[in-house]
Length: 298
Image (spheres, one colour):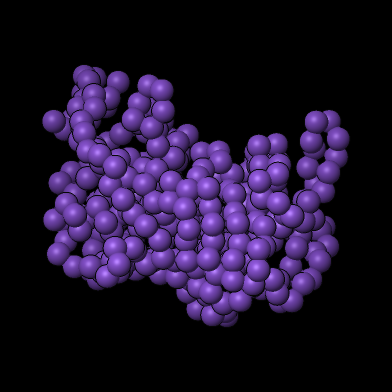
């Protein structure tokens, strides 16, 4: 049954629970009409104790323009709408194919940050053309006024002052947008990285006016990294697709990595490739349906 919050009655909706490398989602089919959910209802769906439980809520909407197959809308666990989610994009194309919303293995979708191309591969994984990375601080957006970066290779590491436990600390981060903002720092051991303490400080840092995803990357070798990400509005997740892209792109520019990299997250492995310059980043990884159900929204 479909209704809207304005009806002032309870609303029962259908949903699909999906995951990509452990990054989990509630997927909603809005191709036949908008559900009109509020930020509070998105938060409730994402709540792991009182709702369904998810890192993000993904909405599948009809094509907004010629040449586009669907609109892809993402809400974080805090109820806020965000620009992009790479692991969610893989689940998106798996959903529309499995649910018969398209009969093609490749689709183009409109996100808040632009158009991306999604492809189901023969081995069952999904490849996403994530578009070209952005490094210009105002476009990320990142306020670099008064900061002196360290140059490595063709990239830059920016000093970011943090206040940890009443003490001042400075970390150096590479900043990049993959349709959403990321701050990537290199660590010796990702298992021991201060994700829980530094993650929220970086996420809400005043130099990122739209907040930021905080990535902690351990370089194993030139074709292999380990990664943890503290995501905007969700906290640490088992995997972050755009975070994996951002970490690899940053590592390539800084001279740490080659053009194709395997990224191990706590939820699984992603394959990221970027030839450099203005070329798009490609990400390949799993996308799995966990279960389908109905739930009554408060």
